[in-house]
Image 1 (cartoon, helix red, strand yellow):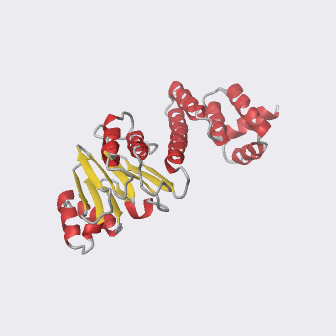
Image 2 (tube, helix red, strand yellow; image 1 turned 90 degrees about the horizontal axis):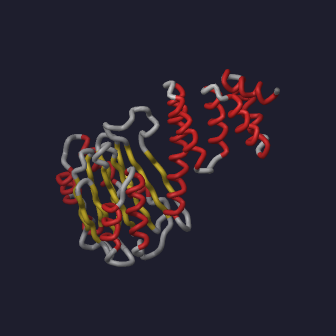
Image 3 (tube, one colour; image 1 turned 135 degrees about the vertical axis):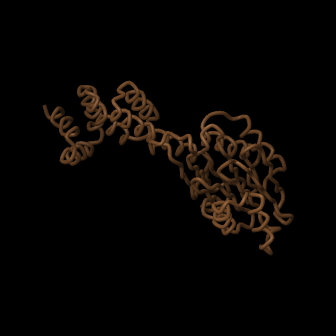
Length: 294
């Protein structure tokens, strides 16, 4: 009833799980991840305990293959389950029970596993694997590309309803807190992967804004301007423009900040009130307010 991927980025050590299904809030039963431990996808006649118990076993040092074997052997319904488990090092184990509804199967690779059941065609899993292998870029983009490839091949026989991407950072992350994990969910939507792609874009825009303000604090003005520009290029949110204006003041670009906020206030007067309230606690915002009032 679901197709999913668990994967690890060898360059950064980040890893996660992503899925799409014609089922409300696929994240709840299927997608499990824990920083420094691993990821689990538990689906078909899903037993969520494979998720939390699998993570607990790996946290104790049990390898994914042994964890999956032990969990399956203790489960009388194991032939109705489809489970993939991966530890933080990218070691993968997967199992598709004999009684999972056709078309069902899984493919594992170096640091990844794709799996699905009740699929429209037998080629969905193969296409998902090929889509992941052919993709480039950040892990979130590669995982989403795999899901989109699966959907183009037919996806879930029943259609589509929900999607999830959950990723935790690895040891080679920035350490800034700005790239530390993703948890995006589409619980009920006519085009869950289309909506997920929109959310991924919005999420990245807000991360760029955060990187911009971090660059301001680190006295890297050129980097700050680049990040602020990338944030607002998405065109997603007026909110991004407001906080970009605050950042521009911190960079000594008061005229640019007043231009940005003046345009914003002209079509959404609420931001003038927001600036007044922020100015009570933030001297940078006070400078911007005073400049607008002149």
